[in-house]
Length: 214
Ligand code: AMP
View (cartoon, rainbow, N blue to C red):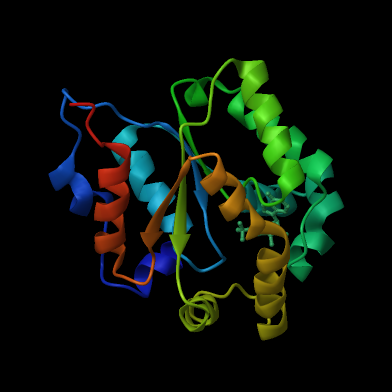
């Protein structure tokens, strides 16, 4: 994610401070960030997290940390994550359930990288129901494929081969893209153009979540 920032113009959370929330507006704080790998949704989640004061929860980051620390989960998922395939839905539901139950997520959260399959959508619905809260918005950050590949190559981690990057995009198209229609039909989807500068996308995202009730 830091690499993401590095390949664009310099941008720190302060750069979006100029449109901080005002009191007479309603704020959306239970949000799913949806989008292909390389769309910049992780960067936007991190920026928005600063503004809203709710955690950005990246399941990819959580899994990478588990792999790094060599936990039981990490050992189990290392190979799958390295290949660009998806970790199984029940495992991901356990990870997300435990994370959303933590105290810092009680007033809101930004989910980055979850849900990624229709079964994960159902699991998330169940988890939120258990917690007695509801999802408020799904922000779809879209970008053309050539830009996704360019960004993915620019920020690739040591073990990311071009093949793995292509595989991630294929998995996205097959498993995750259908979620866009699902959330559109539910009336929860908002789309932003991710083929812009980080600051421009942040502005668009910010307007969506701070849309006033008056
Ligand atoms: P990301 O950083 O979101 O691109 O995730 C990196 C990798 O972690 C993915 O390629 C998957 O192998 C795994 N992963 C992250 N989130 C999920 C999820 N919701 N479901 C299944 N696998 C996931």
